[in-house]
Amino acid sequence: MAGEYIVDLSRAHREWEAVQPVRASLGDAHVLPPGMIGFLEGGAASMEKARAALELAERQIGEGEQEEMLRQGILVPMEKARLQAPVPRPGKPIAAWVNYGEHGDEAAVNAPKAPLFFSKYTTAVIGPGDAIVLPRVSEKVDYEAELAVVIGKRGKHIPEEKAYDHVAGYTILNDVSARDFSLRVLLGVPGPSDLQKSFDTFAPMGPWMVTRDEIAEPHALGIRLSIGDEVLQEATTAGMIHRIPAMISYLSDIATLEPGDVLSTGTPAGVGFTRVPPRWLRAGETVRIEIEGIGVLENPVVSEAEG
Image 1 (cartoon, rainbow, N blue to C red):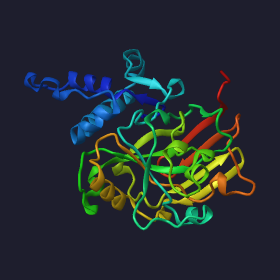
Image 2 (image 1 turned 180 degrees about the horizontal axis):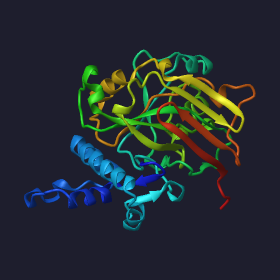
Image 3 (image 1 turned 90 degrees about the horizontal axis):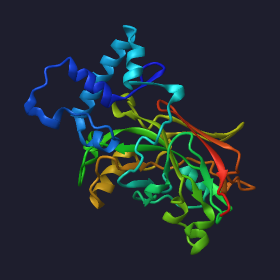
Image 4 (image 1 turned 180 degrees about the vertical axis):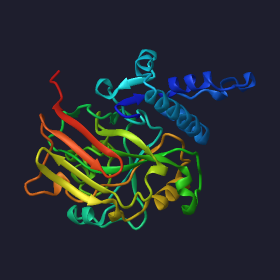
């Protein structure tokens, strides 16, 4: 972003190229990919190009060239933009189970000694402002505010001390869950379940990715979920049991982490199914999640149309 505008970095980079000596031998190496996963795969080079393009755009705005930049599609007014999820189709959407002690207490579950994870289907991912759809087959849809980590560098057997080298940035994720499809309900045992987590629209993400260098300490961020005037979750990420470097290292011993993978780091206390009476999502509401240093993710709630 630049002020009240969103900058199309790919188009801004082409404008930047026009005033730079670019060698023909570079071929496509100087292109800034328009998609997030391609951008992340470009690593430090992508980040450098993006910064240069953004600096040029900000300078041109300062020189009063907004109209021409709007015409070229380099700028889009924020109020006219429709944001997508920062990573619309993560390669691996991974989420931590019971990673805050107070959440484990309210759910009557002992926190795992080692990190424990489940997956969400990629079709669950939606962006800010998109609707969370209450499925016809579920009557107990819950919310979970979470800090999510976007992987930016491929890695296997990553040491904890090098884990942050593999982080591109951070965003917000709402780990929406159909509690009547949990392992506790289906099998009578506590535990993570991909089914309850993976209905369409059950992974709102956004509003954007904040790069790693802008968050000095990801374990010291305020996190808050509210619906209307109800504050349902309020905590800090300091409450994580297993911290981000430990989770990244542990996961990378199991599977190769790749650019565009998203790790959601668990939710604090205050979820709906532990309340008396339970607090389920209702059509017509809007779920608002705020994480310090990142922003606000808002999603309306609607019922699935009867077919």
